[in-house]
Length: 604
Image (tube, rainbow, N blue to C red):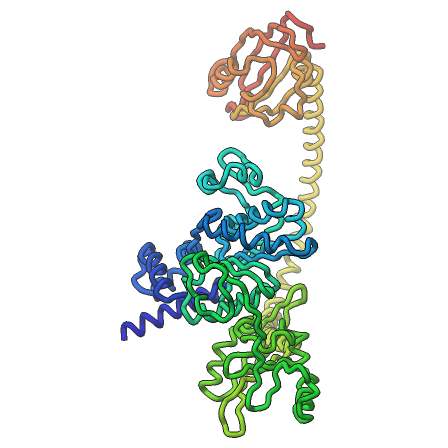
């Protein structure tokens, strides 16, 4: 029982990683996955898979460390030089020596931090020249590890990463800045990086050279057997497959012929895609539709004219039929008939369907899932209800599965609107009942309040007369204050001596015209600034201690100082420092009166 529980916890964890991060590890070797997850479990102190599952939910940042541990990014420029030398001497000349107008498409699978695809770019640029390379070669580099892809996109490497490269290639294809080396722009613009899982995502097509080095060794044998046909499908006829030296999966494969077994170079052998047709008469992708019986053609015409998208998957997991609506609505077409259903994006998006098909086969009854969100940019997302139903022959044997996709976007929206309206109506009814009770209570209170208001109204009239008298007095005092302010400002402006008023924090609160004329600093530039920070000709550091002493309760101070006026001429000044006293006789700052004695042009 503990082993079963442990296995269930492991499977639940793998499923949670897929649902949370979209990474499907189900094809990877279980022993390797368990060993690498155990490293992270030990690091965070999780005793079992359930505890680590809980830790991941509570600490999403742990995903980055987990994926870095699982996805081993071991790579370097021209790793295994002998294999790359064979690729350069035998394969590259064959590919580049064809039609000069023919494009060359290369796919680097499991590219990690980018050294491999940039090695391919250097190899082909050396053989073709940069100009022809930029025009004809496109390199697709994919990996599961998004942080590693971000490093690859930056294309910047340290000294230790490029030390094995020949000096001439390093100088020709890298820009050296400090201790870093950046791949040249001409190479970078020919390499496209993207996140891709070769086990579940649809392969890139029309590829001349697939480089998939030391990736298959991490996959289960069954998964390897499923991936190899996908690599075969990705390649053009006579396309080249370049594997790592640790991989021996193609020793007996009928899909590829060996070019050099030692260095794992193989060439695609052309084969027709399998076209399945079940014993129940469901048509696959037959070349001659007219040869089908009339009944079958009528059935196909009926299905093609339904409002729902229909797919049929046979018992071997091969898609054998797709109707016209499905071709418009989903990412499938006639070319996909005969392909494994697991290779199509519709098998896992908008929802994972392969497990549902297995459930239908096991239970023998249909399953329906409602309103799954399906998005095909740039179109707006829609909602699909999916029916998965078993198809049986007359003798009752299950031979295929019918998947029906119905656009229920409008129905889903109506249901949402109806639920919202229903909730709003219930809330409104409760609010109305409560409001009615409050109104009855309020009516009685209003009758009592009305009598009080009549009494209060007379009191307010008397208060209003008092307020009018007070308001008149305030206006008179405001006029006096304004007059006094204008009078004070006029005195400060007309005084030849510089007058500086500081608050207790030694911030400037007043700066008259005499100060502006002498020191060249306008009032708006001086107000609210720290006195110690003023950049004027006064020896401010010498005056600050005297000012602070006066503010702290000391006697007024007089001092003569040397200064520099706004034109840069030396002058002598007498500075009188007095306390800024308010009617409460408390000091609220200081007043500095600066009088120019001579030595420079006198302030007028």
